[in-house]
Image 1 (cartoon, rainbow, N blue to C red):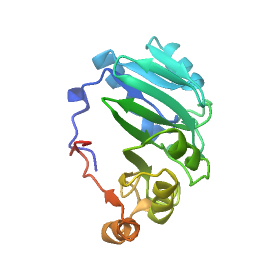
Image 2: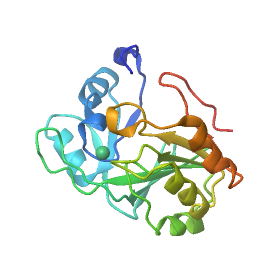
Image 3: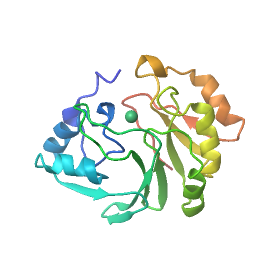
Image 4: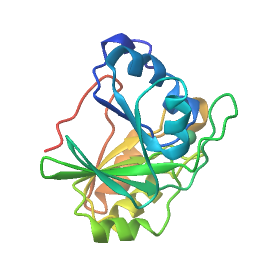
Length: 196
Ligand code: NI
């Protein structure tokens, strides 16, 4: 579904990696080599890439760091994290990113978990990027509950439709959010969204 994306044209100063699964890391080395981008992830993933000569910034759960674009906190996720070759990729995580006065929570691949309430208490989250595809992660119904716990009205759905187990009904998924007074945005691959 992303075959029309020319990876060599992707510009990046930083690459944030939630976990090591190959659908999240397949193009990391190519993009990092092409752009010189710094890799931000957990200690194990950053160590894996540093051993191959890439630059990284290691983090672990609950910790934050001031980068030149804003503050990044690395938080837990309920999932797994191994590289395609079986190498241990640490524990899976997500990121709470504050930049230009806006805060975005990228959950990574995860199940619903009640500590999301704490993220909503500690951060004024403007946008949440949540998985909605079911089978490997939470579904849209659980993502709607997550958005309530996060106290966040604007959600970008991810991790759906790209392979067989995670096809979703777009309109039904959006409706689950609409009844809660929230917005679910399902952005087509290659499109962009201005986070106002
Ligand atoms: Ni995954």
